Length: 295
Ligand code: CP
Ligand code: NVA
Image 1 (cartoon, rainbow, N blue to C red):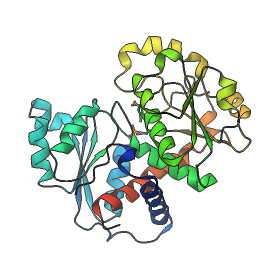
Image 2 (cartoon, protein in one colour):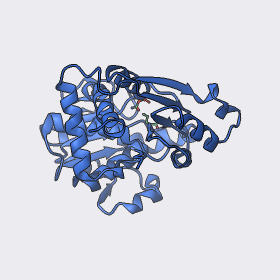
Image 3 (spheres, protein in one colour):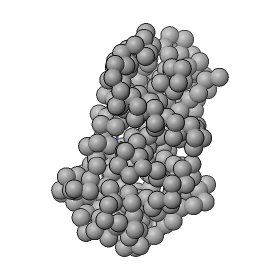
C-alpha cells in the first residue's frame, strides 16, 4: 500500500514518535550515503520555497538518491495538462513526489492518481513537514511534548492547522491567541483547542510559543486588513516573559520582523528558530526513510 503524507494524521502517535526518533538517529549518525540508492523524487511547487525545497534536495542527495525541482511553469501542467495525467506519468518514473500547492484539493487529486507516495510540502490547509521539524526541535530541547502547553499567536493558518493536528495526536494543550473573526470553520473538527483574545492568558505557563506571518502565500489580497487585525498579537520579549522561564520560541520562517515578531526576537535567548530550520533537513530524512525505505 502507498503511504502518502498529506497531513500529520497519516501516522498514529506511535508512528510519529518513531519517525522523530529515526530523524534524531539520522541527525546524530554517520554515513547515510547508501540508504536510498538510486531513488528519485520530484518536487512540484506552485509557490516559492527556500527551506522545504532545499531540505528535500539535500536530504535525498545525502541519502544516496536524487531530487529534481519541477516548477509548475516549466511543466506541461502549467499549460493545462490535467493533474491526473501528470500524476500518472510522473509516478510511473519517480519514487516519490513532494507538492507545494495553492489548493489542498490538488494534493488529493494528485495523490489519488499516483502510484508512488505524495508528500504535502505545504498547501493552503496544512504544512505537516514543518511540524515534523518543530516537534523534533521540541523533543531535542525539552523531551516529550505530552501534557505541555503550546501557544500559537496570530493567524490560524496552514502551520497552525498542523499544530492542531499534532496536539490531538500527541496530547498537548494547544492555545491560540487570535481575533475571533479569524477562527476558521476547519477549527471545529478539533475538540481540544483553546481560543483566547487575551495575550496574558495565552502566554502564561506556555512551554512553547510559535507564530507565523500574518499574510500567507495566497492571502495577499487581504493584506491590509490582516495587518490591522493581527497588530495586537505580535510575539516579543514581553510576551515570552509571561510564559514559563524555560519556554522556547519557534517560527517556521520566513518571518517579518516588526509584524508578527519584534525586531530582535529571532535572536532572543529563548528562540530556537535556527535549529528548527536546520531540523527541516533531518526531519525530511526521517520521513523519506519511512516512505521510500524499509524503516
Ligand atoms: N518554512 C517553510 O516551509 O519555508 P519555505 O517556504 O522556505 O520552504
Ligand atoms: N503560512 C505561511 C508558511 C510559509 C512557510 C504561508 O503559507 O505562506
